[in-house]
Length: 142
Image 1: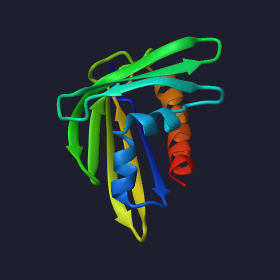
Image 2: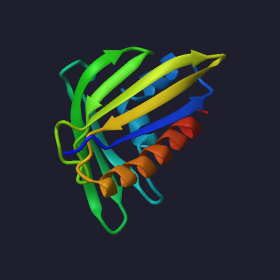
Image 3: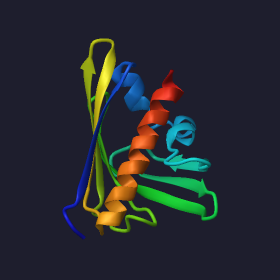
């Protein structure tokens, strides 16, 4: 495990509460946790409490169903969400995703910071995936 990390910032033209709540709503997660073309999310389960767990199944063409799961570490509505991230490409319980939200006009500035990747390849794949996920979140909230 290394200290490789990804930071992505994005302005989303919706209030922080709405953006934040989407990350804890299984129906919304199934619509925007789409890291690439052709990916679908047939299953999302979560317990949106500190210490609660989530599981997201991403159905990837030519790869099948890939589980992504973790534990919520911080839930500070409309400000910060932090969770561990375990996926086939990021296999450590120490891989951590932090979302910081700040109001900006009528919208939200979102900073996604994902740290502790096992390799540069894993980091690069996640950077592309999170970028696509944030773009889809923006569309789904529109």
